[in-house]
Structures are given as structure tokens and as C-alpha cells.
Amino acid sequence: MLSITFKMELSLQTPALFFPALSLLILAYTNKFLAIANLIRKLYSDHQEKPQQQHLAQIASLKRRVYLIRWMQTCGIASIFFCVLTMFFVYENQQVLAKIVFTTALILLLLSLAISLTEIFLSTGALNVLLKDLEKWEDDEKEGSLKKRGEGATKILEVLKRTTMW
Figure (cartoon, one colour):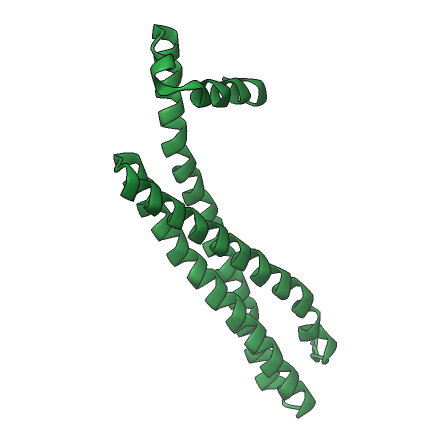
């Protein structure tokens, strides 16, 4: 019988390779969080001035997205932590523990990316709320009543018509 054994040893460089990628990933998650937080503040302010059902729908969607981003960040930061812990175990010549901890770091990274994908799909739902309103404006334009809504809506429709396949 032919027996092949493959013994992989982790080095300090292996988990260290993840630091630049994980740092950029956390930065992207943080930027996304800050953009959504600003949007929520603006929608809240707009809703205080002139309550609209659309604002509530958008805020509810953004609330779910903030929740997901928090877990994306948590898993990403935990992944960095476990990469550092892996380096400690490699330094201490504890290869078995290093492999277990590094595997945990990889699983956390995968989980963070899966949550990110879920958040991306959710963000399209928030955009659909806006697109429904724009479609309503387009229907109103066909009926000639868009002037009541102001010229801003007309400009938005013109830009959308040029940039999308309406």
C-alpha cells in the first residue's frame, strides 16, 4: 500500500499574510457603517420635518444593515485576533494549537464575508424603496402631473434614463 503523508507546518508568515487584507476589510466595513449612520441621521431629520412612510421603510432596512455590519466587523476583528494568537502558538512551537486557531481565524473570515454578502443583498432592498418612488414619479410624468413635485424629480429621472436601461 502506498501511504502518503503530508505534514504542513505553519510559519509566522502564514497568518501575517492576512493582516493587510483583514485591515482593508475592516476599513471597508467601517466606511460602510459610517455612511449608513449618516444616512440614518439624515432620514431621521427629514422624517422629523416631514413624516413620510418611505423614510420609515428606509430606516428599518438601514437598521438591519447596521446590525449585519456590526457582526461583519466582529467576525473580522476576531479573525485578526486569532491570526495573532496563531503567531504566538507558532512562536511557541505549538503547531497543533496553531493550526486549530488558524482554522478558526479562517472560518471567522468566511463568516464575515458571508454576512457581508447578505448585507449587499439587503442594500439592494433599500435601493428598491427609492426606485419604486422614482417609478411612481415616472408614471406621474406620463400623466403630466410631475410639475407638482418640483424640478428636482425631473432631473433625477433624466439622469436615471441616461444611466440605466429604463
